[in-house]
Image 1: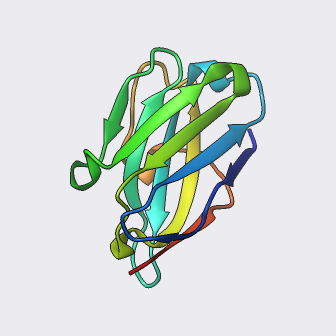
Image 2 (image 1 turned 180 degrees about the vertical axis):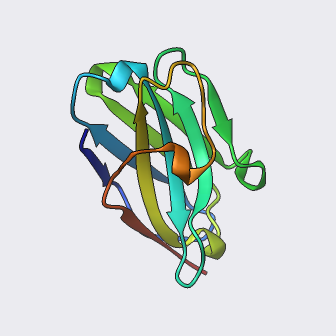
Image 3 (image 1 turned 30 degrees about the horizontal axis):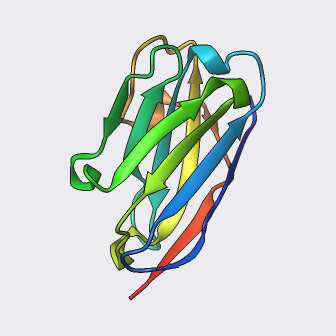
Length: 125
């Protein structure tokens, strides 16, 4: 499985951004996938996860109401919609995959075996 994240960039506080993660391979429609982020000098943290089979989702409590995760199985892709962004959302955002994850959504990084290269999101105040 190869993952390619894109869509990062510079955005003003209060603005919106949509990140994309395209996956290779034949297991996409049966995978658990997620977004994590890592700010400079901080540990990687969970953002959101989705089951590509049934579409179950979970979003980190601190981000609910602003961030939404979605998928498009026809495009082997997941997305992260970020609304009303804040300077503290500045980080490198990574997508991750766990093939054959069923309808499960996982919130810990150790559950995922495949990672994309990350895309940088910078929010200016």
